[in-house]
Length: 319
Image 1 (tube, rainbow, N blue to C red):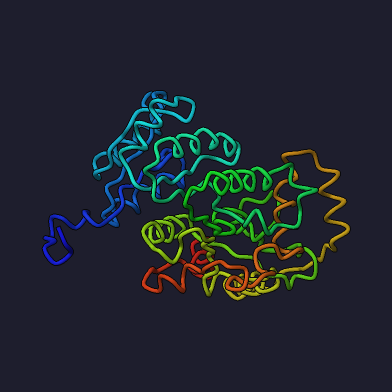
Image 2: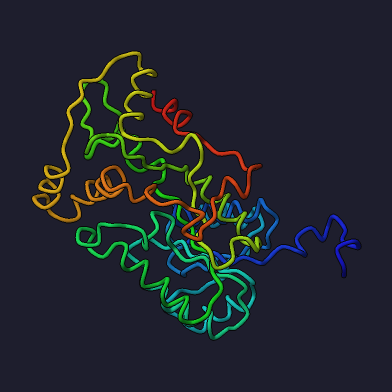
């Protein structure tokens, strides 16, 4: 059938069939919803145990009702994995950072199945090839980089998604470690406060990711998300918050050396918030490089039609 003969009912014909691994997680669930919304035939790899967990089974019911096909299997069960992969064109993995290396099973199964047009591994954060904190992060980023190298070595076509921080991480506290809500009296600013970080809402990350699935411009590339209105320094974040609460905060600055000392004195994993703050707002790991000259592409430039939540809009929800 050529494109001219395509009827409305066949809208999904030209769309890749997408398998999502990790749909019971926050981002995985949003990815599945975005995939269904974009008319991709959507499949979810689901472990048996998920059905006996009420929270997870509710999510699975929602996706199933929306049209997703649930396939029983796991990363550890090679037969079920290959069987699931053979039904689709694209695989998106959204397992947690603790499970990143378990994607090795998935990569081998994709290689064996031989039918996948594109693989999007579980990254969804800073670009692991660009971070400058490898001595501090307990291999958080090196594990992700290891998966990249394996994907490339196996000759699997890919898109890597580098969305930087989620708005649900650090932003609710205005980048104050240990706080749950933004401060209304005192605030600590790390470094000189002029280095810019990036925050993107998870549902927006999902929409941009699904937008990239069939796009030749994102094949074998890193898709970065640096939306206008979502790139802020700590000084700018504090100023924006002060305007919203109509009050000036008492500011204290913590220099790089002091922050590093605090990171070293705080046991893992309690120090990881500070490690990520150091990475983004002192070292500038999210913004120090130019996307185009590094060979990447930027999501809001490729998909200007996709609406996203700005930092200012997100902070309004915290008032």
